[in-house]
Amino acid sequence: MRDEEIIEINKNYWNEHADLWFGTTALPQYGVYFPTEDELHLFGDLSGKKMLEICCGSGHSLLYNAQRGAGELWGVDLSQKQLDTAEKLLKENGYSANLICAKMEDKLDVPKDYFDYVYSIYGIGWTTDLQGTFDKIASYLKEDGNFIFSWHHTLNYCIAWDTKERKVVLHDDKLEMTKSYFDESYFKMPVHDSEIVLCNRKISTYINALAKAGFVIEQLLEESDQEALNAPEDAEPKMRKAKMLPLSFCIKARKQ
Image (cartoon, rainbow, N blue to C red; front, side, top):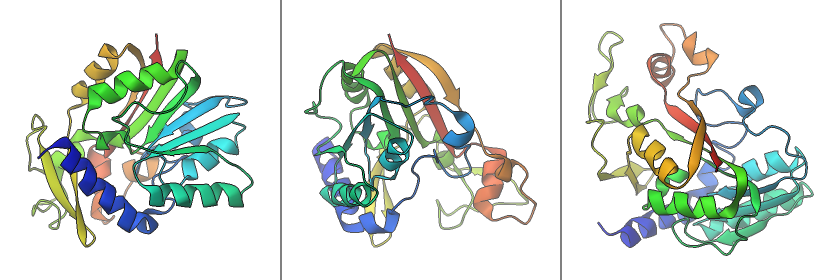
């Protein structure tokens, strides 16, 4: 499947289903059953900082940073529907942002060597060109600027917990490996009445692409939150899965 075809499928999904994801997986959340920004403090003091969000979605992460004193907000998303929602949310709360409808794989119409932070909450994994996207993000950041992003942990798609996901079940609390960790091919996933196309990349693929783009890795977090780690035996399956492996990961990298 060609990259443009993958992007078009995913763009159509978000334009048609944006309302179903309003406010989900946005700061302070980095992912389900994952420590929040309120606990991790990866961003630090945002007073006056220039910030660009890749895949800004419904605008809730932009709002979170605005309320913490960010000086300038920019957001990029593939879906105009998402951007319209983000603009409305920010306006209702007395804020605004420079919002751009574009593919993250393209050279964005944003200033170069300008931003203190570029970040993406559960968005960066949608790219069809990881290295090119990281190279471009590095060009948007100031020297010593920070890039922070979260995404599904690779193991989350390799190990199943529900009969509706990969047709595999938990057997006596033992999770089953259903897909090779090394398989980075694209796959279609049914969601709602539609489908999306994703690539399950290895953690090392992200790390090596960041290094090649000129980033220094400051933190790699493969965590589950305390709620999941302390989950009882009769907790819902996804929480029990998070007790045994990370569902998400988060990386903080600095431009050299």
